[in-house]
Amino acid sequence: MKSYYRVMLGPKSVYAEECFTGNFIGTDFGINQDLTSKLPDDWRAFNREFIPVYLAAHTDKTKIAAGLACGALWTVSKGIQKGDVVLCPDGTGKYRVGEVGGSYYYEPGKILFHRRPVTWLNVSIDRAAMSEALRNSTGAIGTVSRVTQHCIEIGKLIGGIPAAKLISTDASIEDPTSFALEEHLEDFLVKNWPQTELGKDYDIYEEDGEKAQQYPTDTGPLDILGISKDKKRLLVVELKKGRASDSVVGQTLRYMSFVKDELAEEGQTVLGMIIAHEDDPRIRRALAMTPNIAFYRYQVSFKLVKT
Image 1 (tube, one colour):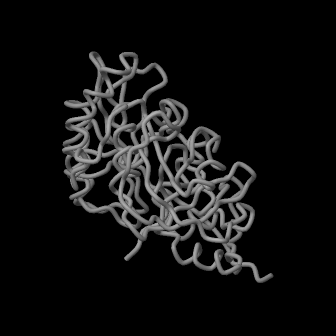
Image 2: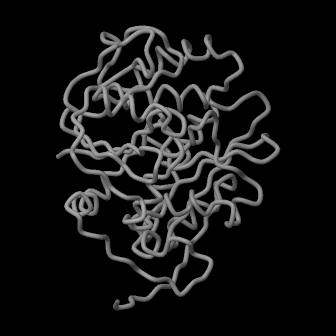
């Protein structure tokens, strides 16, 4: 099954036209070496080798920033497979659509020198034609974001069929389509973070245009990594659609352990948060013994309106 990705072609799509003309996508991140023989199937092995390389070249950056950069570099260079579809903003409010046609290649001395060949389709998608959910996903900060969950809508948009809409009865919700259907809780939360309780004390960790959403760890990607406004606390946020079971407590603790051991700077503490639609007695028992993990329930109201 092919996957779908939104890929930025330089800051604010500055290199978009060159990529469209040259039939490629690419990154650089200041790692100036050929990665042809350095791209294992497991991103963890790549990060183990190249996070120190990145930090040596960027002495002012944090370990979190290094993980974000290396994760994006590996994804574009290796994680995206031949035949996968990429949506790339052109800087005018539209997205060019292309199919990845081959493996990584290196073009030293040129822009975005870590490259993949792409066959650009004779079609573009207007951002205004997307559903709010897809706009949230494709508008996520960072070099690359996976948008496979929207593959049906993307297919329709490529064919010129507009997406359906939902209208919310809750004025505080900017994105009723994604949130009401529980399919895009993460994108909704990221977009609306400043308006939530979390936004009062925490920011989503962001550096050099890369946001700590789906941050890679050695036990899987954690949903959101936040940092307190005083920079003293890191917050692991785990999102669950529907009812959360007690197993999510162990999952969250594993992510917190990784953040403490691999990412936290001296003096930073690590906290956890689980967000779900419902809880149950088992998770309440588990949380009673883990005071460093908080639990939040989300609520939403919506209605369908025929147009």
